[in-house]
Image 1 (cartoon, helix red, strand yellow):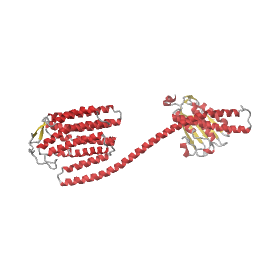
Image 2 (spheres, helix red, strand yellow):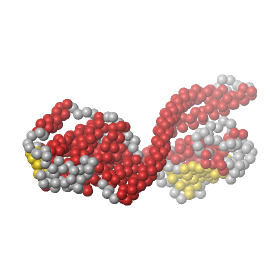
Image 3 (spheres, one colour):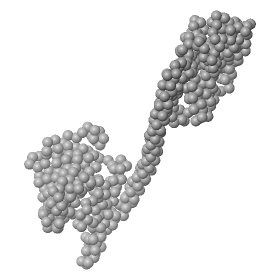
Image 4 (spheres, one colour):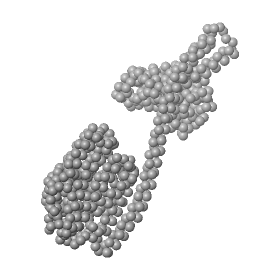
Length: 563
């Protein structure tokens, strides 16, 4: 038994934790660590009362109680009090590790531990608790140093339990990291694992070194593992919003600095240093408050931008869905329209040819107008179908070797009579030498050239000049230029000429039936043939030039795609 009247060889403590026996390092390893740990533990619990946050708080409270008891033991000169508090320390120590393991499991899995696992981990703890009051734990006191004599429970069983819990944590962390598929969750697991492993290993190492070397000053270094763990937790909250908490990095930094500076007030003996430290603490608090305030504003703006970006993304998805529905509707409607329009065209042609009897001039004039209107509808339907195919990725290109000279000649032959009826010259300028054949979809290229010639005739006043088609080789490309002496294109409209539904401002006075789709479709067709198309004009009423360039050597990418 320890004599209750026995006093250790130093004065009675001040405020329970201050005496000449307390090493200077203790004020850094105990007071700041407890304050920071308790602050973060209660902060997390106040923001999120989940099971994992409760277990984290229990672990921090257990550690803080252990450190407080250690501070009193260092300062006290009463042997009976030291003996009692030492036993409590040994009882609390494994609880820190057990609650740490429990916390890690619930944090990673987001669920409670199964009953059989709880029993497995509780049984050795129950045995340990039952042995605490016996001589196997503490069996005496060294009067000179006021240190307790530790038995096998304190020396071996407690540390074995600690290492068992640490090993369990490491195994669980490694397994969770390996089998987790989410990259973000894997990062959270690894940061949590490193932080708590450093904390518990440092804590256990300090106590083991103190017990076996009887140099308890070494144990002070083990407590610095807690601030490291707190740093990892703060990083998890700031970076990954762990515990569903939005904490600013500035908040964590300001609080840490405030605690570290304030902790110095506990052991400064000089009044001048105490005043200077107080002023530094006050200035740090004011500056930190302004920093946190500005950081919160930035964070709020960031959240607003994220919210707006989310809404914009949803709106884009809805627009994309509507656009797909529109494209599908146009495709179906165009297919349904093309059949009756083709039939109307056929019957009108037969009527004009006299298949159903001779027509009087008035009837023939009306039918010609109907035929022209029907032809415009056919062209519109074809344009809509082409746009639908392009937007849905259903347009196909069949590459083969084509002679551009023959394609241009066919276009000229097709529009010769039309140009003549409009009192316009239609001229074809052939190349001086035979051009190489091109690997292209000739049918679609001819369609584009035909559309350009058709437009050139439409937008040239009757009897005012004409249209020229020029074919030539320029370097590695074959160029087709369709030029006219028509109304021209203002410079401001050139960049938008090939956009969908784009039409010039003044063209409606010559052609009211255009849709603004022909050039859009033509641009896509030429580009899918590996070429490019653009327009030039010297200005209003000065004519225009539409130029197509196609490569002599087709790219392998397009050959694989369409070949």
